[in-house]
Length: 482
Image 1 (cartoon, rainbow, N blue to C red):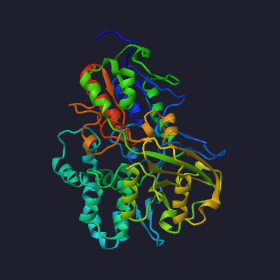
Image 2: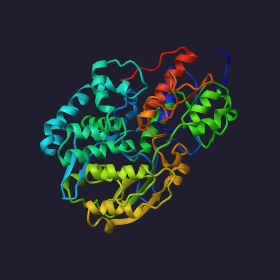
Image 3: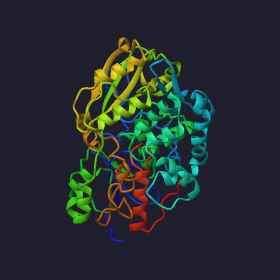
Image 4: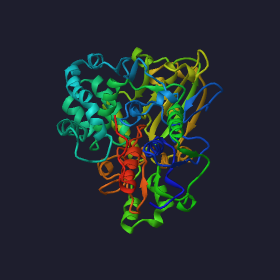
């Protein structure tokens, strides 16, 4: 093989770029990882956004998939400073009557609060939890022949359903239907869409396996541990290196780009076939997010006790209310009572705030590209379930979709999933090809969340892209998964 400056160059140091770089360095290649900002991380960064001593996660905050990633689990990240902390309650879902459903590590404890749906919930979720270790490598990867066809088939029959259909088939109580809606709404699309049940089922299973943990010190702890391990293997990282053209890169046998189709076209589009370019140009992005971080004088005074113990709280009341508001958002509107995802990292991680103080993190879905200020709408939703919340606010920091994209160019129009994951892009992400990670140009690969399995901090997009490059270019086996 002809001598190059590096065997591989990876552009972008989000969790997928880091995973791709590690996987290639692990088998003895020389890898350069380039990052446009001064620090690695992509969506894995934390900072004092409000007041001194208050550490806020700029993008991702709660990491059930990072703790159970089939690739990350094989890495000695604890030796590089990563420690996960699990709250007493993974997620809680309050209702207007002052009660709440909760997702705890115990299936039985979770099911008991679901009234008439106690047995239905167990029947729905127990098989997935029981078989997850065998299912995970296939569920978190490209479309392929599964290693456990029966278990995957059973999962697929439920996962491909619209969340509304699954609820109507299996759940009757307000508690179970509300809890389910909050989980499925992580799909960031109307809950009547096909396959919106997939993310809800996976997140529920993760709650019963790892309890939706947070990384001690902030989300940047995950990125720092991955980067530290990569460097310990001999990998090289250059920060402050913005890539807008392939001409900027040193010579390499393989280039892996942790970017979405929009940037991929800008960087390497001139090398692609007309068909591949046409497919990329048709790629669709989904709803954006409006995000708030708060510095608080104390813990959020939720009416429901379960919420006061939860790392994550879903604010949206009933299934019907969440369905309606997510639909309105997808239609370009801004609901008065948006579905809000809220995290309380400081409940379990004392490093996030000064003694006696707390932080909170929240976002709601908005139309792609919206710059409408949703501060009042989000805070009204918190106050709705936690009277007195506003009295605790010491400082706040907000980001609308354009600011999210300016911070991380992969968040096109505020879309944190790298493109909508509806049925039209579930199996053809980013285009319809035998390998979704290969581009039409030899040696150039895409390794971002715009490839299977999509958004989330799990590194599996990067791992699979690196695996493809290792087989294609270097004729090497990829590192094994857990």
